[in-house]
Image (cartoon, rainbow, N blue to C red; front, side):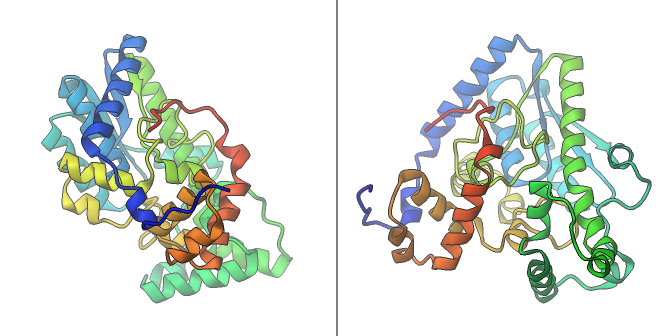
Length: 322
């Protein structure tokens, strides 16, 4: 068993942003030169991770040769497009916006409101209380949260009455989650191939270790420059790069439905998840996390995710190790 560390776990995640930035830049530049690419392509969602990757890419090559695509659908929140456009303008990078709704509908194989919940839920005001209650009710039925179910690609094996309720209320929410991520990846790959661009992703280590991505989706690209960094460390790098406070302060979200955030689906903030992951990856005893304010229930929740997605993580990503 590894030696117990005395300081706060969150302090152990503090890093030297300048040194990390140098390593990430060198990694991307090496891949860029190996590929003999004409530029760099990436998806710019308007969230923290893609903002960091775009900011770094703009420091490596001529900003105009960095191609950022914002791929939205009918359920995407307009503010994320605003964040992405403002950042692209600030960085002076090439920016395109594309509606992928029809492509997602085609992949799902049905012409209905993919991702939009039933009419009663659309009328329901999304508040912290309603998000909590809906998560808890769904968890009691499935012993799993909706997006985690989608990420695991489990089938729906419910009794008929509950299945009908599921199809009306939960089904439309989860059915489009995977296809949206897969379509985004396909669009980016085709765009990059057409223009001979190096395609890079924006997945972080916390997401990778907890399986918070769709296999074959946009967060599962071969080249992932910041996959060596926990979410907390991506925040540190974002502040060092001068990413806008709007993006930094926005709660992490899959931009799948209004009011939906990573925390509301996972049940824990990334700050706590990172601390548990640090303990698990470094072989520390569970009590280290307990002494740092993590409850046994919180620890077990992350540990179960970490264990259950081991095969899903695989070893197919290239990224700098710190």
